[in-house]
Image: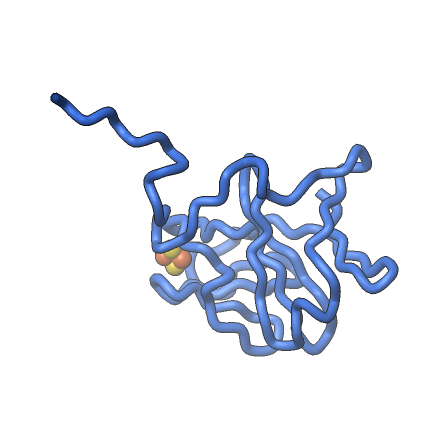
Length: 132
Ligand code: FES
């Protein structure tokens, strides 16, 4: 007997080794169009966190100047910027080394004039909130 095809939930790792997260476990968007990324203590200085939404993901970086959120998919070939290396305000994509300023979204190495989407971040009661 022919085996039934697996559902999306059963396919395992997604592109570039990202883990598929079912819709019920993704970050919830509030009616004010904000999303809670977690407690400050869960995102230590120097770390990055991937915030999974239904339509796209966000990379949240905690660097010296604070928290910065950008659309996660690198515009070159969609590699997750959360996996990149951060020095100062610059993240270097781990796939082909394009560089972006995580505060302004400016592309510093790659396609001239390109910017990545940035999102305002706010701290409320010890939690990090992103405005979409
Ligand atoms: S996917 Fe980011 S530089 Fe190629």
